[in-house]
Length: 209
Image (tube, rainbow, N blue to C red; front, side, top):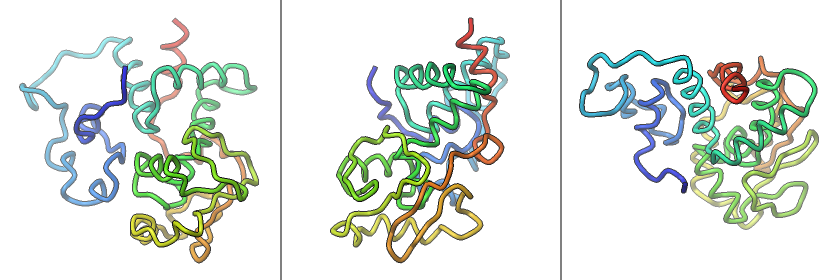
């Protein structure tokens, strides 16, 4: 199955929450979720059948997968990695997803969405420890420096996105230098620090069946 290419706002409506897939539009009144806070479909806001236990677990999995923009096969691989690590599998899974390079570029504010961050990485605009890395799924390690290439520092998308970043909006495990368009992944965050509204235990239960 290929990557979803339809209207991403429908994905937010399907999950009944903002997944921040559209960039700047998600922060304005133009966000469709502000006016249509119900799943898409011809029956609109009318009552729908209750979800089964499996359905609830599936929705949590789809929600997390869509937030980080990964394929089902990738997601399964991350889950298997998480099961082999010490600690709670669900928490380990989210920690792994947070270490993806495209996510770190987004968290630093170099891109308005994770999708835009993937494009920056694929187009070789991002350096990790001084070397070009064009793999969005690259897992960043504590102490790694993520920087915009010198020849890419004039990109409008980066500067427009950085205008929204403040000291309070930046997550604590990242250190940002706006002047140099660089940042450092200080440490792998704890689950309580990661602002992702997902019940990861339901995902563990889903894959444990």
